[in-house]
Length: 496
Image (cartoon, rainbow, N blue to C red; front, top):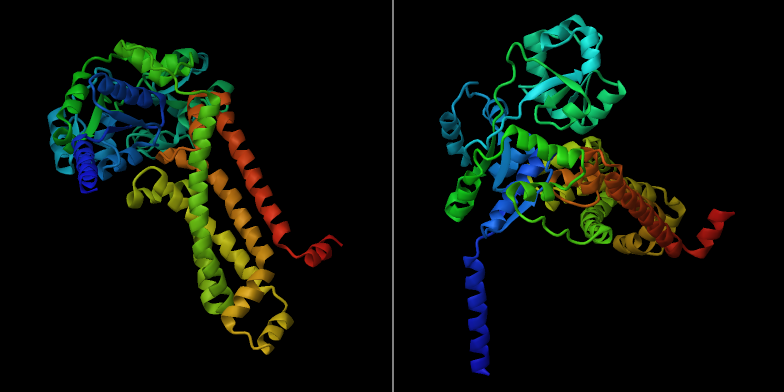
């Protein structure tokens, strides 16, 4: 017996040592546009080809989300552009800063930068060529003569210092009909005539596809946007080979190659993985599972987000609702606080959780938890306050202690209202959880966001339909519970 125990302990120690000796995978992030995802896949596949384990967390959102994730240690690498580094991430850096100067500014932050990958993807403004010819517009300055034009820019471009703010100031543009939208949807709006001018990435495949004219930046507002990989400096200590692979990609991707890859994904509907593998000269990886496999995977992720957040909310919201019903002054404060949480825009709530929990499922669960509180607290409060005072007096006359009255009289009588609040929270959570894909939480939002980015209605429906079905299932389940837990006498009274 002792010998067996020693063997088991020795085997466990060997497994633990082997596990500790295995470096964790390199975590690659990408922004929510095609080129960034393709570059993330190129890095992942190249690392795998050199025997280094890597995972790619796709389409995590905009620049600030990726930058926070890198600084926080949630990812190790992501593709970025030198112009964005100068204007957005290190705003005090001179516009003409060299690569050496950028690296010197990044080093104290624990961040490194590879050599440029070989192409530049600058911001630009574009409009339909035929209309540009008709109006005589070839430069951004020419827009000043047409103040009534409708402009539509990507949401990030609207808020960036190197975007619309600076553009309007430097060019003194008079347009007031300016709206923010998703970058991929802006092309649709441009084609339909809903907007006339939008921001472009100069490697976008849509520029020739939609016959767009790129307006010349005659006042040189936009800096150089040379593609690089930003990485955590501790990656060099953890896995020097990974950094060598990333540096080996420097200078290998020219503008024409990047445009072809973008076109293959956006126009030919090839997967980013297949496109990246073709560029690297690797066989296309076999796709894992089909539609059923993807639905099962995303359903599991979505149920985890909704189930955990709703369960935690019930544990806290029920006592808060009881407190609000018992003590009126304190109840006002509780209701006000949960009401304020509900007014925070859902996307903002998800982003607010990133500094606390990083990226992935944890911040999404935290945001959904806060959104679940108000319906449950409010309905618990309403259910308890709506009980007939005569019933409460009868229970008190019978000499029942306060906690017994609560558990055996008040909560059972308020059960229908409480269940209605939980049902409302569950249905809201199912829909709101789709935004979790923006911060790497997965779920049904993943195909929706990818479908919007690729203008693929099938992918959008692949996430939207299951989300709607799950919301209906949740609603039906709680309605069935409500009927099962409601005494027959009360059910008859409700029907008649």
